[in-house]
Figure 1 (cartoon, rainbow, N blue to C red):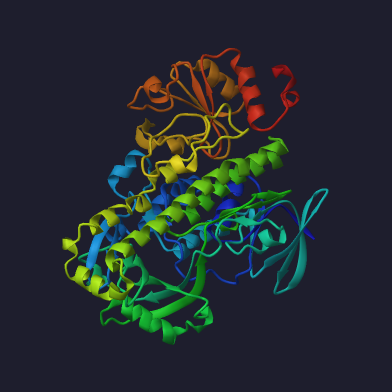
Figure 2: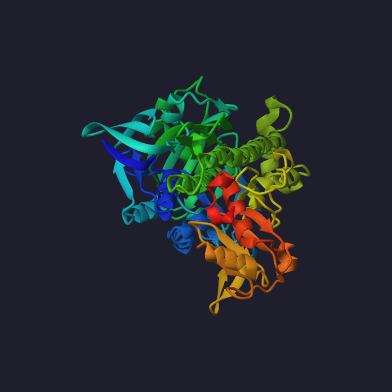
Length: 561
């Protein structure tokens, strides 16, 4: 029997990030995956700014990931088509990938096939001695005991036991560990069934005049969505089907080839690489934790892909959980800190799920316009509109209504937390009232530290890159010598405005704090506390940290009481 502080079950992007984030905190983990080799189907494609920021903080270059992804010129639009070579009914920008986004993030969203993204994470894992990674190994049982969790692992070499303090179940949407824990999912399980057909083809000749990343197809003779991971090579057709009428097993290459041909509607050669069924769901786990076992990523939430929020929500799950587990394991926090994982991340999943579901339902408005009110005359109505789409007064409005679907900047960057791991955080806005597109940088408790381009050491860098991703950071005003001195005396990373970096904006106008004030940042970059003019700064800083970390006042050093 071996022992590791943390077992991470599932080596998809969320599991890999969890292991890397733990290692960044100095915590060893055992990462296992039941698959013997990495997946080849492209799956997720949108890696948003916050996920890229997380990657960069652990040494996985966000700039390199963006270079490996499709550029905004190739993947900057969503198009609503009959077929790929057929009529176009309209187009919308796909998320904010241009230079204007640089005012709010150092790394705008990129479109990168999941296997390429995972390859960068696997390379970092291979170079990290604190991560023990085993492929072809499934976690088949978990049993809590007085000292932690005993995990049963099964692989080619038989069955083994592993003792660990905590487990992160990142084993995907059909999580076997979640089922074994009897944690129910809340929400609709199967909104629509699809066959994912991954094929390789050079379709630049058909798409150079109208490049895009998503092509929604509305011709009655075909249906679904074409996803361009790389217009010169990698494509996926998401084809809807009815499992009551057709079994997923019947979709072999002979059946899928005509579906791809109908979607493209032009004589091109292509090779089918992967075929697999999946169900669109909008579900969230009723709880994210059972004892020492935590759900993360798709194991905790399953969204419709409309919005590209699944992988990215999971990435922040991993970030939120990793620093808290590390703090508890290192004796720096009380076990109550771990309760704040669900308290902070589940409301975000609810908001993202509701928006993804709304995005999916709005697409039916376009069907209504294109097909008309009379099913008996659907083809006639569609043919007439496809011949002269500019003549429709309803079509532009129906397409414009999809814009929030493809501009979720506020969901990506503007989520806030409210929990015991924060000091006086404002109440959360109900999910239904969130403006998903309008992101306004906030310096409130619970918000993530806003990105700012600042001058440091003669270079222009993001303020985000200066904080400590492995511990607390005190961001002090230009006259906050008392707070800065207290932080440094306690071994805390400290940044003083005007001293360690220079911002073009005035500190007080930016943060709403006096020059004597300061902000306490958590390891995940969220603002934990706002300090005004100091009164006994050393003691107050220790007291606030203890409260945030779930430690009783008696746990403070004797000289601070």
